[in-house]
Image (cartoon, rainbow, N blue to C red; front, top):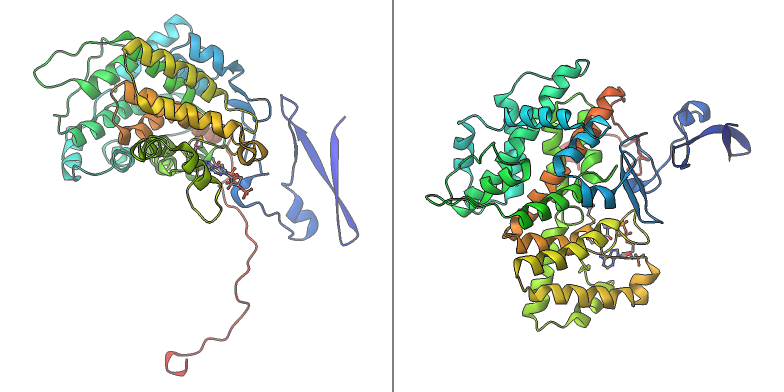
Length: 428
Ligand code: CMC
C-alpha cells in the first residue's frame, strides 16, 4: 500500500507521496510541492534532511554503522577484494568475473599515460603548491587534451571516458607528489597491479630499482577501498551537480577534488596529523586539546571526530584502527602519535560532550597514521583520498547521467531588501 504524507498549511491540506528505498528508508517526495501549494518551498541548509537523488550505489545506515557498496559490506570488501574490483563493482553494479576484471585493467593500462605537454603545466606550478590544487588543475586540464565530449547515450563512449580517467588519474596524483619532491616525472610499470604501479610511480627514485612491498600494497588497497564511495557527501554531490549541467566527466571530477580538499571533508586527514603533531610538540597534553574542542569560543575542533551521518560509529574507522596497528607492526614503524591518537579517542569516548553529540572517530582519524607509515607525506593524504574516491565519483556521475537527472538548481528563501528605487551616485 502506498503511503501518503499530509501537510497542512493555513488550514489547507496537501498530500505528498512517501517513497520507500530497498532498505526501507522512507522519504517524503516533494517534487510537486511548489506546484500544489502555489510556490511554497522547503528550506534545509546543508541538506541535513534532504535526499538529492535516488541511488543504487552505496547504502549507509548512520545509526547502525552499516556501509555497503552495491549490497556488499565494507568489511567484506576491505578484507577480500582489491581496489580495481571494487571500482568495477561501484561503477557497473556487479563484481567482475576474472575475464571482465582483466579486460578492465588492460583497458585502463592502455590509457595510463598523459600528453607530454601536461608536464609543461606541471612545470609552471611552484614547488610549494599543495598537491590537491595541482591535481584539480591537472584533472581540468585533461579536458584540453581530450576535447571530445562524452555521448552519454553511448555505453561505449561512457566506458572509454571512464577507463581513460582511471588510467590517467594515478599518473597525475603521483606526479603532483613528484613535482613537490623534486623527482623527475616518470611512469610506473604496466606489468604491475593498479595499486602497486601507483606506488612505483610515486616512489621510484632516479637511478634506483623500485621494490614492491606486499604489506604496503595490501594496506593501500584497503585504504582506497574504504574511501571508494560514501553516497551523497559534499564532493560527490558536487560531482553530480556539476555533471547535471551536462558538463563533462573530467571537469565534474575536478570540482569534486576541490570540494574534497576542505578540512571538514577529505582535508581532515591532513588536519588530523597536523593536530596530533601539534599535541605531541606541546608535550602530549590531550586534555588541553579536549578542552579546546569543547570550548565554543575556540574555533578548534577535534579533527577526525564527528560525522554528518554516522551517529554511532564509522565502520571505516573501526577497520582502519585495526589496520593501523597491523601495518605499523608489520613495517616495524613506531609512531608516537598513534599513542596520542588512541589516548585522545579514549578520552573523547568517555566525555559527555562527545558522547551526547554522538561524536566518534571517523575515517580520517587513523588513516593518516597508516599513510605516514607507508612513507606518504602529509600533504599527499587528501590526494590519496581523491584517488580512492575516484571510482565513487565516476559511478555517481554515470548513474546521474544514465538516469537523465535534471540540472541541480536549488531554491532559496530571499531575506534581502525588498524593492528600492535606484538613487544616482551624486544623490547618495
Ligand atoms: N570537535 C568538537 N565538536 C564537534 C566536532 C568536533 N570534531 N564535530 C562536531 N562537533 C559539535 C559541534 O560543535 C556541534 O555542537 P553544538 O550542538 O553544541 O553546536 C555538534 O557537535 C554537531 O556538529 P555539526 O557541525 O552541526 O555537525 P555536522 O554534521 O554539520 O558536521 C562534521 C559534521 C564532520 C563536519 C563535523 O563533525 C566536523 O567538523 N568534524 C571535524 C572534521 C572532520 O573530521 N571531518 C571529516 C569527516 S569524515 C570524512 C569525510 O567523509 O569527509
